[in-house]
Image 1 (spheres, rainbow, N blue to C red):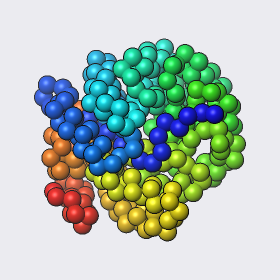
Image 2 (cartoon, rainbow, N blue to C red):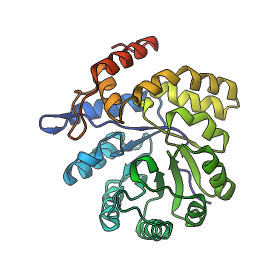
Image 3 (tube, rainbow, N blue to C red):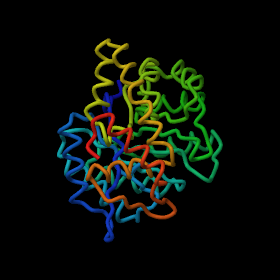
Length: 295
């Protein structure tokens, strides 16, 4: 029986930057606040964490810092994806040594691998990893979808335990779950589809909005798991406009602006990412205020 890495809401953490690199004082306060607010897990160095513009040293240090700061209070999933399988495996080894609970591994980007290539790559990673692998499917960024039949094959591997599904195609996800339900944990990778994927047997969400609202995002999942599907659905509706605003520009541009307004970081990104359009930012902050956020 495969072990579930986490159930509920895990935050895809932003990474606070300053002129010197990662601001670990701010990062530590963010991690503590997330855990104290009741979040169920933390993902470091993912898309939202701007891993794509980090140096190799920063990537490794951020993983180690998050594990140490979390101190076993919640599971930590390390973003280890790459279009270079050997480098991806090296990052997984780094996450292992740091004490991470799992590795989140994105579909290789730019290479546009075949489905056979995906099977061979993920199998290689799972064979050589001592920590569980969570697949990350986000074809809008990588150019390649992990097809349901491919996930069916990968689900047979004892060390591939879950998938963060951000493809957005519910029909494809239904097909996938018809093959792998009970063999692979499903996590929503889209905040606007948390309840639909929970209804398909999902174990939770790897979330962007939970940077702002960790307690509320965890509560949405808790309501669903407690049988209050209507209550969970109402929360999904309640946050629809805020989720839209958080994705009105490419992630993590809006969430960085939001977290800066809340005092958790500077509104600093690295090129080619730029700060948020001022009119869109104004709308985002206005919506945040309607949810009682002090900005």
